[in-house]
Amino acid sequence: MRHKWLLLRRVSQLSILLLFMLGPLAGIWIIKGSLVSSLTLETVPLTDPYVLLQAMVAGHWPESTALLGAAFVLGFYLLVGGRVYCAWVCPVNMVSDAAHWLRRKLGLKGSGRLSNETRYWLLAAIFIVTGITGALVWELLNPPTLIQRVLFYGGGTAWLVILAVFLFELLMSDHGWCGRLCPMGAFYSLLGLRSLIRVNAAQRQSCDDCMDCFEICPEPQVIRPALKGEAKGLGSVILSPNCTNCGRCIDVCNKEVFRFSTRFGMPDKTVVPRNSKEIAS
Image 1 (cartoon, rainbow, N blue to C red):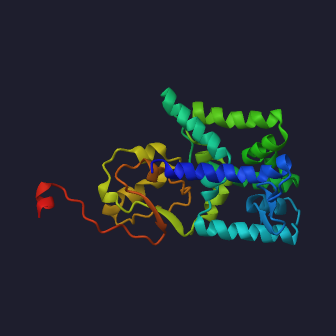
Image 2: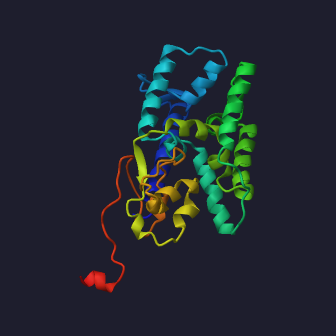
């Protein structure tokens, strides 16, 4: 099924937003709270560890429920990959993908060159400012938080921040916010350093260099070692913590080079025939 993983990601993102909105809009309280902190079915607490850490740096010791909720979230992302949050949960991903789609439709070329390390410097700066001010300053501007605020309560200022992210990625830097600047992405990438679930270029010998995967990937630098590193003795599993496990490369590859596996996955031993004589033999 073409675009299977894209459709599944959209179902995941929209379903999560819907579950949060059912309470305020319809009085059906399956989940109470927000992406920052929530309670599911009056029983299971979930806390964003990134926001929790900011609160602790600001000098506010969290309650035991918040710590338990953060432990649940940490355990999940340590297993499946920290930046799964970016592709499967964060609503800003839909804004970023819309900007990327429109760039391609309009034929916009060129993109601001931002270092992959910029997000980590911004992450460090946020914690420094939080420690100095004793307040969660970043949460006043954090796009995922603002999107939920807009959906629940409206708000012109929040819309301006979301529009700014869209225009930045459309006109200045393709996937620039989500792929180069977002401090949440930087934080969750650190959680995914040793995660189990990975994308595997298991059939990399079938690659025909069409470059579709590089074009669609928000983090194209993570593909090359796994796809083209066989001569250097590199494995076929994408081990970079900045891979979002979004499945875009799986969706667009006509040669079915990519698939999901574990970090211990090995490339298939299938030998692709090079010519008609090999087929005949």
